[in-house]
Amino acid sequence: MSYDSESRSPSTPPTYGHRPLHEDPAIHDRRWFLLGVMCLSLVMVVMAVAGLNVAIPQMQDDLGATATDLQWIVDSYAIVFAGLLLSAGAIGDRFGRKLALQGGLCLFLVGSLMGAVADSPTAVIVARVVMGIGAAFIMPATLSILTAVFPPHERGKAIAVWAGFAGAGGALGPLLVGALLTGIDLGPFKFGPFWWGSAFVANLAAIIPTMIAVAVFAPRSKDDRVTPLDPVGAVLSMVGIAALLFAIIEGPTKGWTSTPVVAGFVIAVVGVAAFLVWEFRSRHPMLPLQFFRDRRFSVGSFVITMSFLVMFGFFFLVSQYLQFSRGYSPLLAGVATLPFAGTMLVVAPLSSSVANRYGYRGSVAFGFLMTSVGFLGLAFVSSSSPYWQIAILFIVIAAGQGLVAPSSTGAIMSSVPLNRAGVGSAVNDTTRELGGALGIALLGSIATTAYRSGIDLTAFPADVQIGAEESIGAAIGIAERVGGPEGESLRTIAADAFTDSVNVVMAVAAVINVVISLTVLRVGHRHVSDPDLAPAPLAAAVGD
Image (cartoon, rainbow, N blue to C red; front, side, top):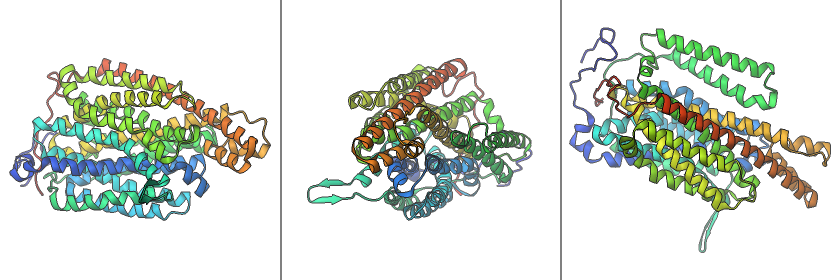
């Protein structure tokens, strides 16, 4: 049908000649299976972020990577992911979400193969960039497709399950990669240990069946409005995000007042400001800023950003704490995070019911308070603390996050029209990945600064001091080469210094969560669909 996008108000629901996807009997009958396919795609993307954390010690040793290299290996994925999500969501809305999902899976496959054969930190970073591009098309497509195939009365539950798998993937990734790097001996059946590149090869086991399932079963859907893309907005957002993360990551190494770091912050401010001005004035903005007038959208976006800021920083550091400070193998480090994954899978699907009964504001604020209690407990653990204490704290943190993320995702998606589901999903995913990238960069930098300022190496030769001060991984490597009582002393000192730095970060994370909880109580909406909020325009997602 013809449609004049300039003559209609953005808040006016469009009229379609097609019925919504969730009213198609064939699609309705397989909606839960489709949810499983979308969750598998999502878990694969999230596991690619968290799982690689377990391989960091081996990568640092085999590739000679510095602490800054490691942060870039992790964050290069998230930077590209976050920078392209809005554009990818808009492209999916414009040309078809199924097509965007299939293209993203193909790119993710290529990036995984590149990472598996990489032989330098730079090559790994390039592979992660390619994977990030693919993930930018995968993640918004999964949420927008399931939003289209579920009827309104089931949509909140489906989104809660989707968000629960997103959180669980962050803990399941380390388990899978840990098993590959350590190996498993089941009597007559043995496999591994494999090299760190197996962390990339493992993605193939999920990508190939997912690609087949998407091709056969996923419905085609897109926005029937012919909305032009916004390449200028895409470039400006990428420049602003990349510059900000560069400055945060390089700050501890180059100095916070060094020219490159200061220039990074300046470019970030200019880039973000230019992006906002462009989006405000553009006739076809990548991110319609009027969405932020709805508190469901604005508060939900803020909550997701801050939630993933602390959680991705948490996963980044905990994997290193378990291996470097406690001496766990990669597999044992992965197993140690299972209480988190299990709790997320149990609590997240219940979050929509809790929010409906007790209110969005109350349930999310309580979730952040629970998370802060868990982080506060981790601020006092040592390298010799009993594991059961750590497991309980993991459960508390996961339970809090299980109440936060699904409800906030539902709030964002309920505030945008279904024909812009790709943009709504992309904003939700952008806040996740931007928050995650900021968390790894910010909390990782705090840990690096605290480690370097807290370690006492005066009893060791100058060359040992210089190497061991660079990072905990470098210190452990030097300790193994030195050997004997001196090497063991260096290992103990470095492990204690790194544990102290993790304690500092966990205390900071606890304070952040308390502040967010109070903020949500102050400005948050009561329910996902508050009567005092303007209703979101309702539109149908149609087949292409």
